Length: 111
Length: 116
Image (cartoon, rainbow over all chains, first blue to last red; front, side, top):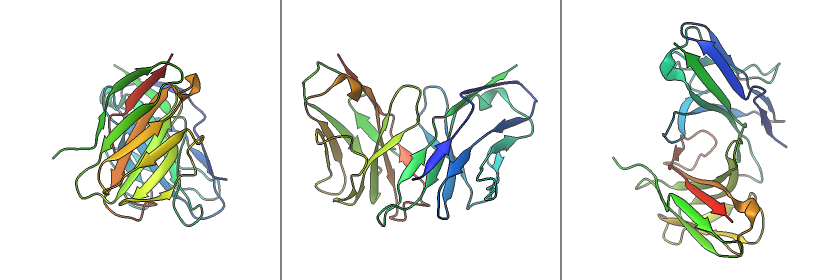
């Protein structure tokens, strides 16, 4: 069975500090991993995915298959980064991909 | 352009009532997903459509839950004989292609269902 674990429910930092939101996964095959973000009063939206290997809004995430992790990082947090962040995995089940989400981490960036 | 829309945005039902939740995906999007999000949790997969075909319904929690997308666009999630444990936000998402493992999903605002 596939599983996504986000160990921190809440992460609180000051503006300009580095941020790392942790995500660990359990999946027997080759996963597709994503980070989604939900800003206050907005809908859930894709932030980035590992296959694109891109940096969005200063965030990056590297897939570490050895540690089965996909941590989200940003060197200097901004107040506008305050949001709920969800790590997600797409695997395979019966020939179709079943998306699995973590429970989310609330990031609060203080001025 | 218009994104994914859902209606109603809020629904209060008495235990035992039937409810119907509607999702209007982005025009032309082939894939449509329903998720259930309980308070303090991430979205949990319920079911997936490719056009009008329901390809996976393994996440539906019981036979009280039923989803359809008869013409391959608008979808309805129906919950019969609602129970208090059905209280959650129901999210709909659509994506352009069929390779759902890698395709970007666009989410609606959700319907918050409260069962009294």
